[in-house]
Length: 349
Image 1 (tube, helix red, strand yellow):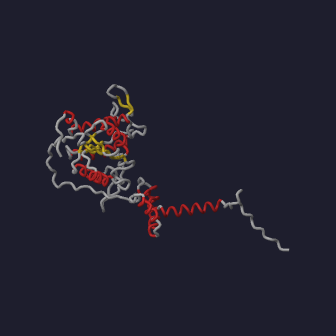
Image 2 (cartoon, one colour):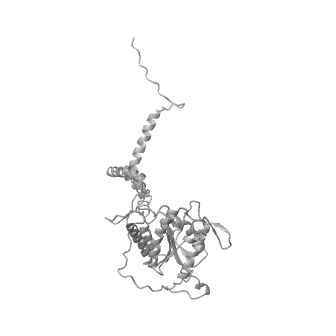
Image 3 (cartoon, helix red, strand yellow):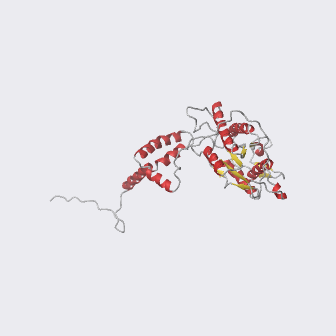
């Protein structure tokens, strides 16, 4: 009598539902990841593109660039693009490296002392504070201080973009942002701080055919100078006054040297625009008696105050308040912000 083949009993749970093997679950999970990668290919490519220079970025690009190409060819990226459009975030996946800066004037115009323009509560001085993460603490101190001054009106909160700068417009395009804010909001005073993420030799957005050398080289310095000058001119040609906060000393001697290179570029460009741009040198605000880095600085009362964050780069609130006082002092020198208190007639226009 032939032996009847016995089929394995299906595994079910207490409620009678069929249970699947672990292998089946892994296959389903891998398939979901595979499909998800194609659907989100544009976002994956941008995430790879904006990574810091190095082998991790190279590997990520080697994977995501062909993935994005196939996804686009098969229209698998369209659901994501449609959803972004509905949410009003169509630009999220764009990799923007365009750098639009004003052309320098053919002849340097004669320097004329600017008039000390008057502002009042009815016509306040509109200021915009922006930059990389280093600007956040000083910027917040500035906004707290001007909150008590009726003749000054901040434009929104501090716009501090982490990991951004002038080297990598693909991470965040400050050139377009500055132009946009100057055209739309029309601030008459701007406070910027850049450079904390620019101490490298890798730049995006280079003009076609242009290559640069290592950080601090002649070609690097020339391109960075062009970018700094472009930002300054975008602001000042709209009639605004710019205070550019210099990079501080840090607890890393090599980083401080790199920051000095950036500061030298900014300071030299500010000097070419007297009365329109002021470079605020912060180096010695936070140096010890020996001229080196210190986390604590003695205040006017002789008490040691913590000025620098534990990472040795960013600021504590006391440091932000110190920088804010220096910035507002410049505003008081450049603008008339107090005569309205004496009951003088309001300016027309």
